[in-house]
Image (cartoon, rainbow, N blue to C red; front, top):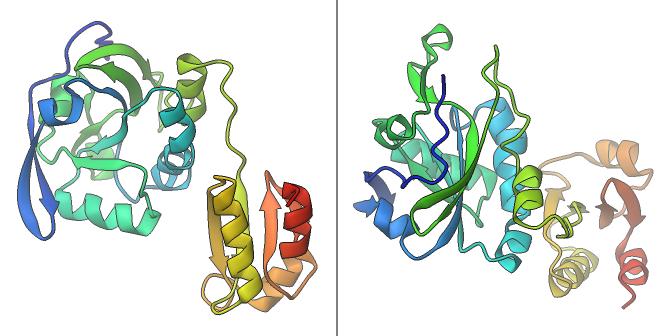
Length: 243
């Protein structure tokens, strides 16, 4: 039975991290003392649900969390520092602090260390999230103990609803571009001016012209989607934003 530590202090642990190619010790006091922090923990870096949904959800919604009093968002996984650093780079997770719990000490102290030997993972973290205020767990959202890798309650949207049910979820923006395109640069500038984070998909790197046409019906860039709706090029984006 996984334990809910609501109202209790987080475990006192020192994490071995890598910063500027050097080993740096980071304590739980460094991470939590005097701060309001969201923690989400997951079975492993680079694994499907963790990479496609769990981490991206928190990364994309970081600004709205900070607008609602959150000082930091931390992802903790039973992986080593090198793996976590590479995962952060591949995910472009600039709004998240990724912490390696290589020995599983923090995860075990939280009562969330589980045996995933059947997958060849060894001991890993169960998937959960929590809001921590000055080192004390304000609330926890623990995935149900059922087969597989459930992902029902530890997501960013559930956490945001708990912190502020009236908070407005940020729009999901995807932007097709190509290197050196001035209209793409204009579109990106407009999105930044309106504090709209976006996923950039680069023509010739991430997709082909054929794929672009199949998705948008166009062969020119930029092409902008907002919450799954095709807006169009830079002029259409300007009209959408009212600029």
